[in-house]
Amino acid sequence: MDLKSGSTSPVLTDASSMNNTRLGIHSALMPYSHNGPAFSPTLFLTIPRKRPGLLDDVRSSLLDAMKSSSPTHNKITKESNTETPQSDGDLAYRNWMFKYPSALSSFEQIANIANGKRIALFLDYDGTLSPIVDNPELAFMSNAMRVAVSNVAKYFPTAIISGRNRDKVYEFVGLTELYYAGSHGMDIMGPVRPSNSDNKNCIKSIDKQGKEVNLFQPASEFLPMIDEVYKSLLEITKDIVGAKVENNKFCVSVHYRNVEEKSWNTVGHAVQEILKEYPRLRLTHGRKVLEVRPVLDWHKGKAVEFLLESLGLMDCDDVLPIYVGDDRTDEDAFKVLRDGKRGYGILVSSMPKESNAFYSLRDPSEVMEFLNTLVMWKKRSVL
Ligand SMILES: O=P(O)(O)OC[C@H]1O[C@H](O[C@H]2O[C@H](CO)[C@@H](O)[C@H](O)[C@H]2O)[C@H](O)[C@@H](O)[C@@H]1O
Image (cartoon, rainbow, N blue to C red; front, side):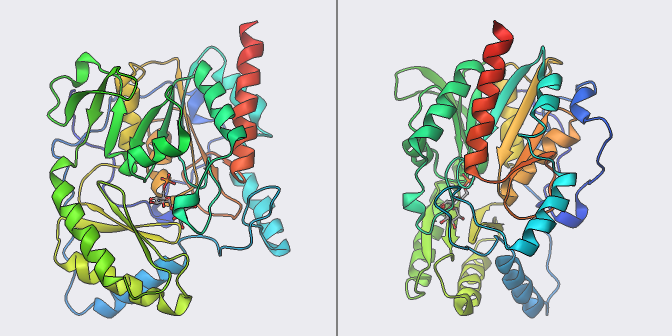
């Protein structure tokens, strides 16, 4: 693969730095960017030096970030599997939807733009295909959702891009016809292409069906380090009631969803203590989860570009990538699509929040409806 100089910021997406310019005409109507994939000559980020004496600031800002990492885990309603907004919140949500219209009510607009184009679909897993639940081991997707994903994959190349261990997300989804990227895109199983044959991070492998595939693991050298950190995190958090550490192969998740709020500081502090020993690892945030990952210029947005390239869809004017996700880490993918003026990010959220996405869906049940609508539209258009 051709490694070109990177244009994507290595800094985690921050609402205040987002380009919120809402274009009168959707950027997907504009010509595609022909800049090619934004791969850095070196994948490593520059580690910013912290000024000494800022530890307290760092700690309190970590706690603030932990508090704002996910809407309060309100009771999940049986019908919609959503974290129900308050009634004030409803008004705020409706106002927010002017900026991020529903991908369902805007479907006709999306379909008009997609007309004559090949859609490539990228789906996050947790909070997008499966509802957010207290126990990450039980975050199953429904059978109806599985059927919807399977149907959509019959018409469009479809990939799941998750923060989880790739094997784990495959176990949850269980569909062989998809492409899978785990560890926030640091573990991609995709098709073999001549373009990736000379990339040192790519190896040919055989998938569970015996098909030759390409395995892209840009963080492979971090594997022993991540294992070590996983064990240390298990040890250091073992007395924090409700804390859960998950090994996601090239990153580690430290869940605090089930930890009493008064102990969140203890969780954050424990993770920071471990990280002091590992300057080549960094901390990012998900929904009530702290994630430890390599200081590597690689994220879900780069994974989208990598997959588009691997599928031979990268520099094609007639390809429309759509990425559906709910989390901060999905913002990297939304940003890549927005900055590249190629396609749509769809944010799954039942709460207003700033995003680089163009459209919104409220919860996984709306994601399923959107997937089914895409399939119906495609079926009609091929008649
Ligand atoms: O990229 P994703 O597929 O969205 O994965 C992100 C993280 O998802 C999981 O954690 C989240 O979902 C859990 C189950 O609903 C929930 O309990 C937790 O609070 C959420 O943060 C997963 O367990 C993590 O490893 C992923 O990184």
